[in-house]
Image (cartoon, rainbow, N blue to C red; front, side, top):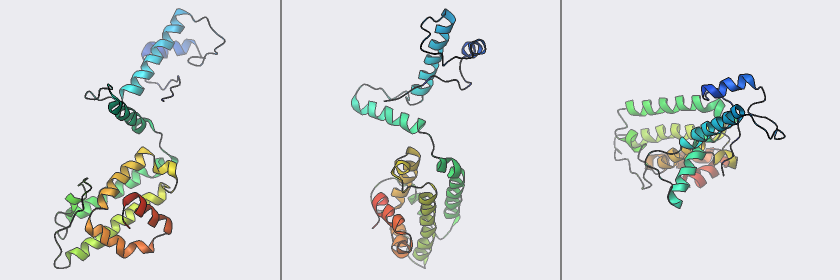
Length: 215
């Protein structure tokens, strides 16, 4: 179910915005008023059409047709992802998290001792991933870098308050979790968790085991 309420945000058609200048109650006229003028009725109709187009059109790419239950489910999942309001924690920390994420990736990409590791981070398959470079201390170095990735996960968990189910199930948080779950299939990250994981708070250990699948 999608609940839509009439409101003005400034991006409405010009005639709707002009009508607002004439009617200060628009678009919140009392339901006691059952006798709209033609211009009043048309302004409400135009506003409703605009709100519906913006709300529902955003979730419907050209190749998505809602002609069966699966496609309808996908469509409404798109709506949820687009219109779910950020939590205060997400508003406060999302820019810093993105910056830290980019810096970590740049560091790994530029590290000559980690050939192929950067590409593994973007392998979204569920299959276990074995990092092949295991000689000359490179594996130990990769474990240390993986510890930095775990620290990043911990910061996300802590600052977005993912201990709360409503935060954990938010589409924005689920985007991070999709990334973390793919990382959890990499052997060096598993090794890093085996080495450093017991030092973290119990709540985070439970989170990693339950949500990322690393015991």
